[in-house]
Amino acid sequence: MLSRILVIALNTYREAVRARLLIGVFAVALATCAYAMVVASLSLHNELRVVADLGVAALSLYGVLVAIVLGSTSLYRELEHKTVFPILSRPIRRWEYLLGKYLGALLTVAVFVAADAAAILGTLALEADQAMSKVAIPFGVMLVVLGIAIARARHSRVFVVIPWSFILAVVMWRVASPAPEDRQLVVAGALLSICEVAIVAAVATLFSSFSSPFLTATFTALVFVIGRSADTLAHLPKRMFGESVAFVFAAIARIVPNLHVYVPARALLLGQIAGQAAWRYVGVAAMHAVFYSAALLVIAALAFRRRDFS
Image 1 (spheres, one colour):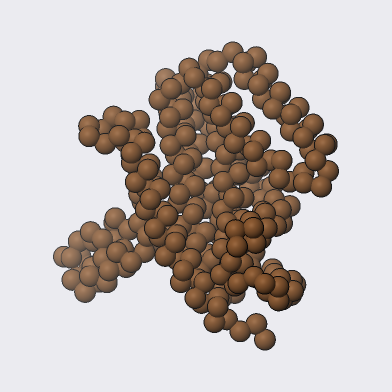
Image 2 (cartoon, one colour):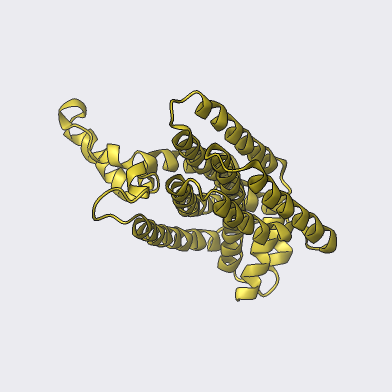
């Protein structure tokens, strides 16, 4: 069972990383890092904070965008090209296939987040007056390692990037040591972004199991917006909106996953709030993401099981 799910997940990842849209979004993410340096130069002694805050915000937004696109098109592409029929004709259950597609999309976004986080950490190191050589040399070595690995792995080049991106993030984390607080903010923000993406990808998988790509992307984006506004919707003033409207939106806020959990205050991620440890908060948020993702995937598997492909 696990081997079948793994094969589907890796094949989904291989198809996703070849998409031009993903490359374009990553290029925009790198451009955002450069833009953060420009904005930081205009601030008054808040360069590190600007780079970290802007980088984490962009990281979350781009990660969600990639998750929505992959979740809404991956399964439909298989159905459109009719490649799903020979796959499901083999001894593989539909829920295994659906879970493999979800894990492949999640793996793709995780690699994207790791590479983008590495770029943010490198930018942070430069703003923290780290020596240019201490940033350029490790990055250059990692590029050489990537080139050698790609040259030697002829039949699995796309999979080389998976461990490389996470190792690069760790290397850049070490390089950004002159900015310990903002470095912690970037790492915690990246982990929370992956947790949020796990829920968004599960929502997209649910809708794609019975809907078209356009409706899937629209509904998933709507759920994302509502989830980010869950705290606000749950506390609408009754005097302004009326009791019935406030009750309806409060009910919606309770049903939809509260994605505002994954964009906490800066002070919380820096451990500056008494009684609230930053990494404990990240752990609780991760369990929250696992619960919602699992529940959504179970519903998606039931819907996909009843889907008629004729």
